[in-house]
Length: 123
Image 1 (cartoon, rainbow, N blue to C red):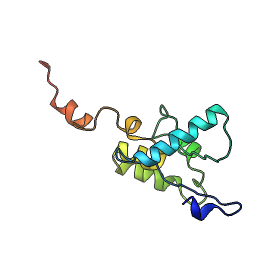
Image 2: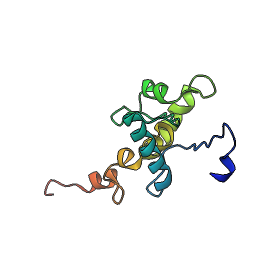
Image 3: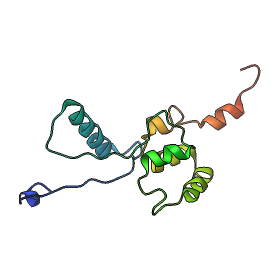
């Protein structure tokens, strides 16, 4: 995109929710932007609408903190229904913009529910 952006006031926007384990390009862009902000380096714009890693994914206050359209073009009822119907890791990725290491930490191969169901007194 660089040659096409040599005009005055050119902008390149990269827009997405958090990706999955294969989304290395976008995750790298997010990490670089956050690092630039922390170091006080200008020359770009980063807008992140993600919930803190420790936020309660079922709390409407969490949704309001990271969904600017909530209550305007998206109803709280729609989000609540999706929260109830979706896998929690996918809800956290798609709605709270949380990466897989936060959305489903350590349960990528064997699901937490399957692991818990297999537990016995002896184990």
